[in-house]
Amino acid sequence: MNKRRVAVLIVVIALIVTTIAVGAETYEPGSQDDPVVTKSYVDSKIAEIKAQGTSGAFFEPVFVKAGQKLIGGEGTELILRSGTAVAIDNGENGLSDVTGAKDLLGGNEVSRNHLLLIPRDDGRGISAKTDIWVMVKGSYTIK
Image (cartoon, rainbow, N blue to C red; front, side):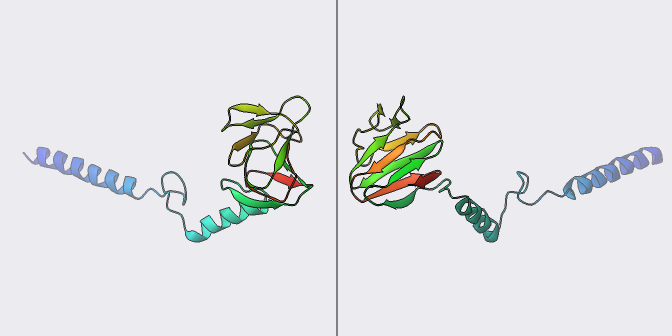
């Protein structure tokens, strides 16, 4: 009978030690196992995105004067909100007009509120005929 009690006691102690060891495991802050982050961490990541010269994951309103060109990088998304602009192509392919489900070749007028996608970093964008406001997500330059 005593041997049985000792065996049970050993098993119970082993279970308690194992439970404590598993519970004491530490996770790296911000990892998938510990997803809680601080406001300062989020603010620093947003500042990094803005410092890269891209609008990152957010649409950013951009003003472009008449005669200027907005050239987008690979994967940049554009939405013309006001004014008149025409597409700039790469000589072979145009901008992807996702809303209109068509390829918008150079010189063609950009429709307001249509989502445009620039597939590659090869000089495609839009040219402002009048002062325009464009919502931009991704990298771009104004010339």
